[in-house]
Length: 331
Image (tube, rainbow, N blue to C red; front, side, top):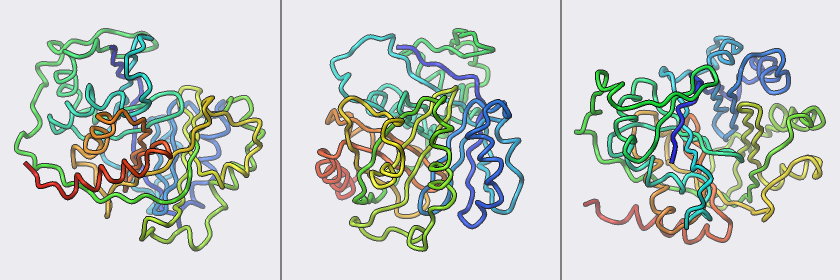
């Protein structure tokens, strides 16, 4: 398999709900006015706590500095696995479970923190730029690694980066097994032809900027609650949307498309309190059991919490599996 280090340098940011009004204009520009911005990688995810915005350096210039904007200090690089079109026996599994064993688990063992962004089209594994030597050294046996530079894919070898190689601190603590919550919303993972984006503009603006009622700001306290979760990505010209079925009904049904199975997904939300960026192994902790059970999953990290979407019919077994992981004594 091939691993591509994409030609984007990304910032991970958070806009607090109260401060969204200060960012409405730049966000509308980034979403709808592609000819007015040089941003090629943009993702916005609304959760009950905040809006997580992941975007490249060009897009980041469009965001005004503000007390309402938090910026994670690192520069992040997106990695993308390309499986050469070879169908493997477990090709049923989509999303993060396809790369759990080959990418996510080995990086967790090297204490490399990852930030996941699954989209309708593909999965992006974000790693800190400073960790790239460790990433390449760790994954080069499993993958042909390429770095995209100016539209060209250039092979990368561990020996090219050995000078900067440092093993991340092996004394890092065993990851905390975080609590998981499963809200009752059903979710859809969808896409949209960018040419039809203007046709849903008013609905999208309404959902993103005007749909906050008082209860949306409430913190989900029990598994029965529905939570506010909406994700929009525009990456290299491809659009991906994640929304619950109630939100989907606001959009014209003939413009959004989903996989032929029209699968509905349920969410597992990871973390009883904000997770932070330095803890390693959170994605591995969730994706490994799912991969072992051959259960598909999309995975979206946000500034405060992580979110895995699994097929609706698998939600009970996934919750049981993850709850069991919490009660097992650590080895």
